[in-house]
Structures are given as C-alpha cells and as structure tokens.
Image 1 (cartoon, rainbow, N blue to C red):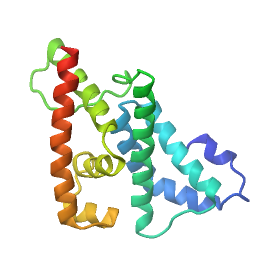
Image 2: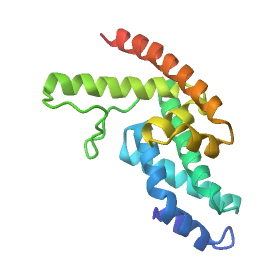
Image 3: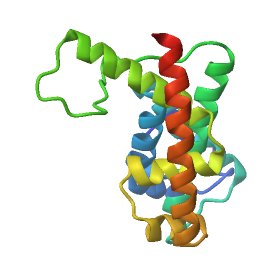
Image 4: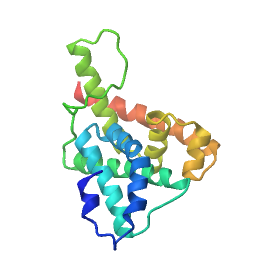
Length: 185
C-alpha cells in the first residue's frame, strides 16, 4: 500500500474500507494507469492520488460498482497526467525498469525496438487527445480486454453505444497516429 494512505487519519475515512478496496482493486488500477502513462512510478502516483482523493472525500465506494469507479478514476488520472505533460511539451518514453510490450515481434532488433517505442509514445499522445469517455472505453476494451456488454455495464450505457464509440475512437486514433508518426519521420 502506498505510504501516503497511512498518513490520513482515521477520522477522515475508515481505513479498513480503503485498505480492502486497495487490496481488491489497486493492481487493476495500476495496470490501467501504467498502460496509459508508460511509466511505473507515474502509475503508482496516479493510484495513490485516486485513493487519497477517496479518503479525503470520506466516501469509500462499496459493492459491485466500486471496482469500476476506481478503474475509471485511474484512467482519468493517467490521462490527466499525460495531457499535462503533453501541454508542457514532455511525454515519457519507456520506463527502464518496466518495459512495455505493445506488439509481439518474433525477432525484434534495435531498429524494431525503436519503432515500437515510437509507436507506444505516439499511442499515448493520441489517447491523451481523446475525450475522457472515449479514452476510458478504449482502455477498457483494448487494455483490459472487456467486451462491449461489460463496458456498457461499467459505464452505465448500452452495448450499442459502446460499439459506435469504439468505432469512432479507432478511426480518430488512426488519424492521430498517422499525424504523430508522420511528424516524427
């Protein structure tokens, strides 16, 4: 558990509920944040911020919706971090201690590894340019592997709306990637 969770006094919120929620959902929130930021330390910061915010509000979500709430909060926090760095002109490449594998390649060489790193960087930038709802649904589908019905239940919409939004999001990401990768070459 992040050390900062222990710094909040029990008067602010019951730690038992937060600890249980963290034990149950912390790893999933970390994975989502890591896939968006591409950096383990940034992902840890995002997860810590999500749980600190819950503790400060004094309302620890419970039940079936708690996991979706924590996950969405992590996705939004990671997107906010990437966007703020994008506005400042800085986006991290890969974390040295936690390399990300976006695409399988049977014989990667130094050139291919550079191409994949550039593709991952461009994808993070492109996702950061999406609306929060589009980015959330894209992350649920392609990072967490959820189906349209599961995403619809988590986001409180219909599977049809999810399908349409995913179609539009893929088209937008394709255009963004073409622009971003065209600029870097």
